Image: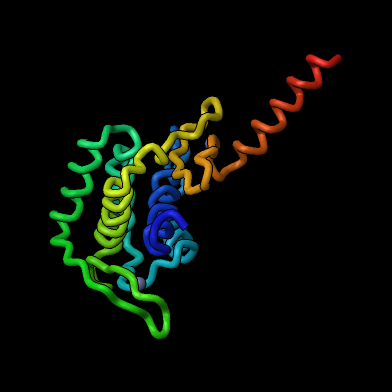
Length: 180
Ligand SMILES: [Zn+2]
Ligand SMILES: [Zn+2]
């Protein structure tokens, strides 16, 4: 594993959150969609199921997307701002017999705030490890999804969606037509 388990989980969740909006498609259209997203990525704690909560989560996405689009100084600025705004206070915690990990907000902080802080803590790890090059935009034409390459050989070029498969099919067809 490249980063601590909780860091990798947070990076995957932040990536998925940013990708819930892509060009004209809104994948968090309502409170039910947010519920499903939170369940999928293991979010527990305070959850109001209100439009205000949904709006706050949606508003976090462009700030997180900037992390993929800016340089190191820009990432540092965003991560620090997210931590500062939430008055983040890192604490080692464990749930039952689970492994110790860091929480920097309490379980009753608003969802968007906890998402922001968890992402900021994870991106702080990426900066400290000098691994920002692992944050990339999917190379499939017209996709635009953000991705985090946690592979050993840094070889990922496409997002988790269908892009990898589509690219393989395109390459196969190109080889076939060249052979014909
Ligand atoms: Zn926890
Ligand atoms: Zn893609």
